[in-house]
Every structure is written in structure tokens, then in C-alpha cells.
Image (cartoon, rainbow over all chains, first blue to last red; front, side, top):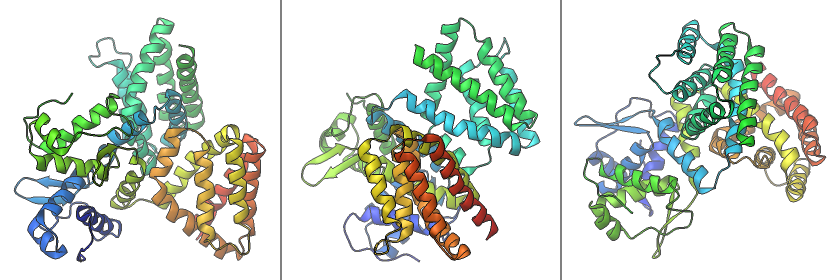
Length: 231
Length: 231
């Protein structure tokens, strides 16, 4: 099952072996890994190297360490990838225009798929979230609800990769959505336009009308682009 | 500069502190980190915890350890993120249709931007890669060149996030591009159609004609979709 390891950068090779077993389908979601001691014997490396490798895999969201039970294969990779993309963006002095284009690319596609593939239950949930946007006594920040609507729509696309890449970008998008909403509200001295845009997008999805959903999402993202470039 | 650490999951907190310093712009690309000993003293944690944290950051492509010189902030995050997305896809029993949709989403946008933003030098490079596709004495696998053309076009979009997300997906896309090319060639008993499609896409980009580039890319991706669904 495991191969013996001889070269340097031992912990990296331990990681590679476990990753490959996942990619080959030999280790599945929920599977329990051998103990550190057993892994160390099977691979012929020190327990320190095994522990280092397990730490990396845990941080990457690939294994979950349960107190007293051992290490299990899990799938929290998405969440662990959010921080890295934000860091890459910062280290490369990323431009907010890239975020606008990314949103246009992902969300204009996702909104059409959501109108086609969303389940009745999801349409109901979307309706409830969108209603919260105009509620006077809503305790949550409107930016948070705004963000929630866009995320929900992307999940409703039912495309695992589109959803994953959006999730990975969520840290970046989150700040962007909240900032741009604030700027638009300040610029127009009202938030009715924004609320109406979200209402129209959600209604089109609920009516299972992909063309209108696309059209209203485009109007919404164009307004954001216009305002961000103007200010 | 660094805060003292008291709670459990020490190595994770060390990682968080370093990540936050990057996100806040206090640590930049190429900066040298303090030595393990200094970090351990400043943060009040063991050298083992520091080493574990550094191993994780190294695997994530955030720091680079140079023999005898120390640890430096680097930006190889993209490459380190490829494997995780492939694993997520496998752990979720991903569907190849998701990959087709992802390609349509990213590449139809990227090809338009490439025609507008590609530098003259890049257009020249693209021309040279595309010519290799029809060379009789080309030693590389045609699937590899095919993949290279699509990656080059995405990089020419000049959108850092679009390029990054494509890079992160490259492991998945790579296998898909090579497999689907093989299937199309087997199905039609020729590869001229595929080569002609790439030629048209590249020529439209070189002519700086985003609409034609989009149209030919769509024809190409539609052929892939059609063939993959049929076989």
C-alpha cells in the first residue's frame, strides 16, 4: 500500500504518497489513516517527518485530526484555499478591476445555470435571503446579505468547479462586495437601486428564466463597474 | 512586529500570524524571515512549532527555504494549489461535464481579453506555438502543445485572478485536454479539424479580433462537448 522512502525532503514525499492515494481513489472521504507509529514503520521514516506531513495535510484541509480517535481523510480543502489566493493577490499587487472581471466571468455564467438547475428548495431559500435585503429591522449588515445572495446563486449552478473556484475567491470577493456596496450607496445617496437589482435577479431565477437572470445580473455588475471606475 | 502566542494548535497560529503580515503588506515577496530561533523567541513557542509552521508554509508555496541562507517569502502559491483542487474533485466524484463548463466559462472570456490585451511579443509566441501543432516532425505530444496554446491564451488575458484560477485547475484541465483530443482524433479518424480550429483561434487573436476569437473558441469547445457526450 505505501512505498518505502529514501530521498531527502522526507515530509514532502510522505505528503505526495498520501495525495496520490487520494487521487487514485485508494483513500476516500472519511477513511481513517494508520497511526503515526504505523505510518512511520511502513514508510521507513521518522515519526517527526510523519507528524510534519500530517500538519501540512491538516492545514490544507485534507485530513482532520480527531482527539483520541486518529486522523481521517476529509474534504475541507476549499476553505483552506481561500487565504492563499488572497495572499497571492496581495503579493502581486492585485488590481480591483481583476475582481470585477472575475465576478462577471463567474456570476454571469452561474446565474443562468442557477435558473435552470436550482432545486425548488433552493429557490425558496433564495427568495427568503433576498427578502431580508429590504427588511427595515434586519440586524445583519446589508453587505453580508448581498454577499450571501451572490454565493447562493453560484452554489445553485450545481457545477462543483465553478462553486469551488468562487469559494476559493470568497475572501477577496467578500471585501470587494462590501466595499463596492458602500461606495454605491454613498454615491447615489440611496440603496433602493441596488436592492431592486437583487430583487429582479432573484425573481428571474425563481421564474426559471435564465436570459432575464443573466440580463439583470449584467446590469448589476455593470453598475458596480461603472461606480468603482468613477470613484 | 510578532505577537506572543498562548493557546493550543500553536503551529496554526504561527502560520496565521505570518499570513496576516503578508495580507497587511508587512511582509513582501522576497523578504527574508527571521531565523527559527528568533521566531521561536519572539512568539514564545517551541522551535518544533515554528518548524512545523514553516513546513506548512513551504508546502503552500508561501516561503522558500534556501540552504544556508534562510527562509524567504516567495509566490509559488499557484503551483501548490493545483494538487488540492484535483483532490477535491476526486473526493467529490467530480463529473467531466463540470470541466467542460469551467473551460467554457474561463476560456471564452480569456480569448476575448487576449485579443485585446496580448502584447506583440505574446502574439508572436502564440503564432509559434500554434505552428508547432501542424509540424510533421514535432517531437512533443500534440496534446501537450494543445494544452500550451490554451494556457498561453489564458495568460494573455492579463487578468491575474482568471489566470490564477486556470493555473489552479491545470492538473484537471491537462488530463481533460489530452484525453478529449485523443477521443476526437479517434472518433473522426483525423486531427485536421482540431488543428484548423486552433489555427483560426490563434489567427483571430493575432488579428486582434475579439469577436472572431470568441466565435472560433466556442466552435472548438462545442466540438469537444459534443464528442465527449457522444462517446
